[in-house]
Length: 86
Image (cartoon, rainbow, N blue to C red; front, top):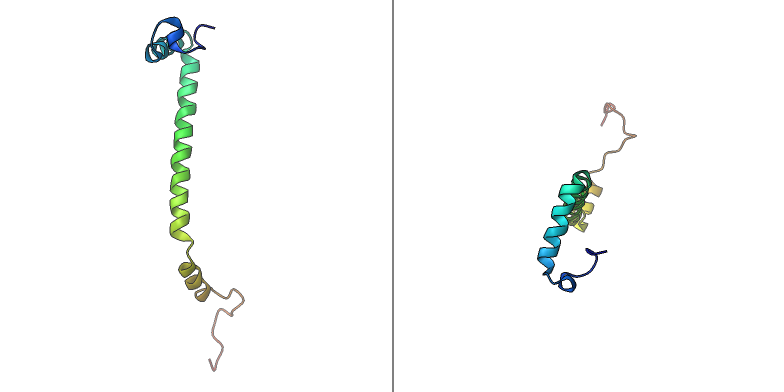
């Protein structure tokens, strides 16, 4: 296949070969190009979300925050109204 090898084997540079392949795909398979571009965009968005989640994890889960949360827990079995004498 002519587009599988590096560009120098056909006498052109890699950038030019990539441009020719891209142009051919856009002309003869526009739906496939749109699908590939959509998949690339989804991949980039997924990477962006993973970076954000890593930052969030670092900000949220510290020993200090866990200790503060332990002191502020709500007793779900506590009566809704305080009894007389309390």
